[in-house]
Length: 586
Image (tube, rainbow, N blue to C red; front, side, top):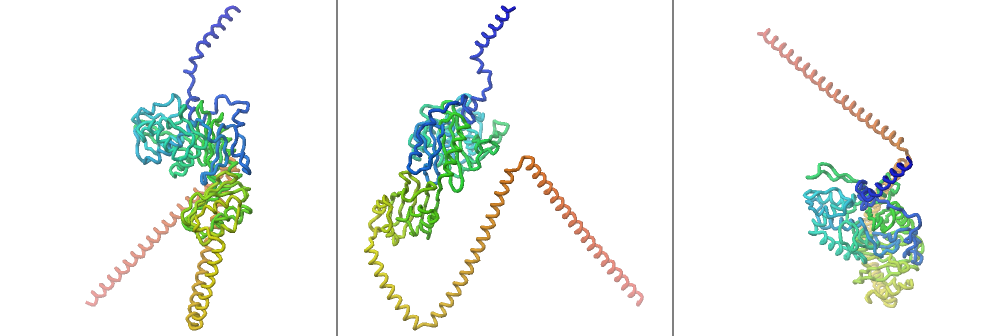
């Protein structure tokens, strides 16, 4: 008996050994299907800290710069999209493989080169993707609007649609890759080469965190792209070859309110994963007037990608502030616009050129650490054209923003009254026409004083000869001034009331949102039922009131008819009486 048990066990082991290589054909392909959709958590999450954890964080080496967190991603970056300031940088220009975040560039080119209401007819190029990679089952000959294609590419990471769109725009996938590379060069990318529109691994398909931030920034400037990337779900309706809708959620879990990775400030992004690239992630965040984008490249696990993106973006929100200002014409100075008098020593940052200087066509975009000191900030003139100046600002050598405006040249001499060390070179670089010396200014002021004295004497003589005219004119001006003051006070009061009402509404909305967040599901359901019941009662009351009004109208109409009939009968009886009297007389 033992002998036969041993023989049976041996035969079973031999069968298992033979069948093992064929097991993959019978196992569902869900893991492979997820390889490029950003949902894969990585097959074997490493227990020990990877070498990439210790890679240099360049931004931490800037003197006085807030220290950013240590993360496992091989490359990462956080950029302020309004100013272009790099807040966090880890191996940001090192070559990495992007996976599906490539589709940000694909979608940008689709939006820029096509009318999204046009229809595409797909060819067999939809089959030219790796077996098991993410797709929406598009068939050759299937028709779909380009708007649906854009959502399918960005939200569902559909590789088949990406191929079809590339061929539609450029004639072939390789020609579209050339367009991608031209666009990357136009945006200032330094270490990027695309070879396909979807991001499936290829040796010559690579980028870096810095370049992806530039691409993501350019895409986000497009209103249509913002609308697409911020969608949490989408439905592609049935097509000529598909008898059912295709519905899907945005793969980026930081946008899904029921996800453990959800962040209220996350306004979009793109996930990516292949076994060669590991997880990649682009995330857009907006909070307190700051619009940031983060890029995470090559981290082992989607959970880590979300967690580390959250960590570096919150580092940006908590340690920096941004000033953005654009106005075609302004009587305010840069100093006023930036509200620098509220920022302590930072109020001296731009005084060498901009203090109390009226600006026209001004544009100011600067991002600074919360504890920035004026002595650590320098500027250089990047462009000088007459009274128009463009400046680039740096904080301990790190670019932090730009400012441009047309200066009133009468005020340019304030440059000679201030000095912040390295800023002297900027004053010297301005044109000699505007670089007025103190002696020249004194002479101009002396001449101006003489003119003012002559003018004062003329006005005195005129006033003595035309006293009544000046008195009446002054009275009229005083009345006009009083009316203007009253109007301005009324408008200011009205504006204050509107702002106060809006502020109260916003506070009530936030209070309500906080209450809802604290409520349990049962409490929310109970409140919804109560609201629905109140709505039902309201509708019943409205219906009852309408019925009563209708009844009253019918009764009034009936009474009016009866009154009319009574009057008619009285007239008829009176007529008969008159006829009878007439016949009796005859």
